[in-house]
Amino acid sequence: MKDRSETPFCETLPSQSRDERVVVPCEDLPVADSAFTTLKNQLLGILAFLVYYSGFIHLLRFIGRHDTKILLYHSVDETESYFVKGTSMCVTPDLFVKHLEYVLDHYNVIPLKTLVDSLGIEVRLSRGCVITFDDGFADNYVYAYPKLREFNIPASIFLITDCVAKSVVNWLQELCYLVNTKGEERVFESMSSITEGNGTGFRSNGSSPDKRLHRYLQDYLTYSVEIYERDQILNELFESLEIERDRIPGADRIFLKWEQICEMADHGITFGNHGKTHTPLSGMTPYEQERELSESRKILNDKLETDFVPFAYPFGQTRDIPGGSQEIVRRVGHDAALTAMPIRNPPCASPFELGRIPVHNVPVYRFAFEIEKETLKKLLRWSS
Image 1 (cartoon, rainbow, N blue to C red):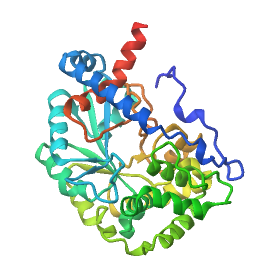
Image 2 (cartoon, rainbow, N blue to C red):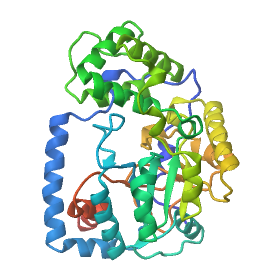
Image 3 (cartoon, one colour):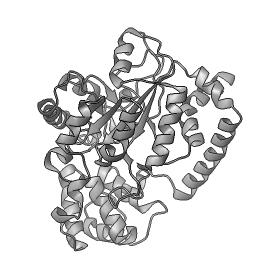
Image 4 (tube, rainbow, N blue to C red):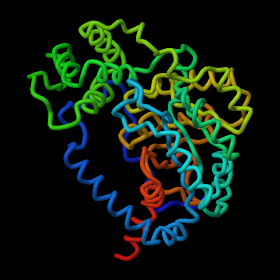
């Protein structure tokens, strides 16, 4: 394989031992200001409208024809449940169908394995597109799977194995449930009280940060505390909000069941590993990473007879992927690793550094623009 000119994203972060791990103060977490984010999205929406309806999108598709696009969905449902509301992860079934029709008209939809196999010999795929889903929500079976079968479209779903094996809700969905039933402000105040004086930098003075509180709380639990501390905080949070953590209504119906997974696996759906607990690898020691990945990989191996098992990094940003994690992912027995960053996938890409384009509940013109946005950036770099 050819040497790539760009430094692999995973090499920008050093591997960490537990003693070396730096706890990030909550006020330093990179959460975008909501007003700035809103303005940015509005401007991008205008640009997307112009690019699509002017026909310029055709040129972008041609220029980027050898970069395979991997789409990243999460939930496909008619309404947002308390477990995903406010996360921008849910796409309606009607828009999902419009997205599928668009990619069928303009791209060659291929299995993820076909892409991975082509990278080893640097085959120049033309207009390749791969469809993936993270987390393994049950609505994937109810709404997405029937349409994928109808259109004969292959796809890959990355499972949080604890959620499937134990029929439990993940800590992210627990936080969503609390925020959507009790309100952001109340959850924020309760967490401030619980974490006061623990030294992790959470603002406990009662003032709201000038950011989306839900994301602020999520980033705190993701990056500022250890895994056992996160679980302890959530236990206290549920207790303070007078909700029984192990009796959340509907929690046992959020994720796929094994019988559904096995049926889908028989009809063109590939299943991959998304970890046991949806914890970023950067929050673990190398030993903990290997245990997390090997245990979840074994669950998939026991339940599904497949020679191809890819891995999707939880959260999937640069800060979530420490140096050395690629080798652990590979050694545990995965065939590829996918991020949640919209980096390009040219023929010389590494199968363990694949980028994906997050898909939201947006109209076709915005969807089309997001697919080729990195191509536009590439074109602008050329012109400059």
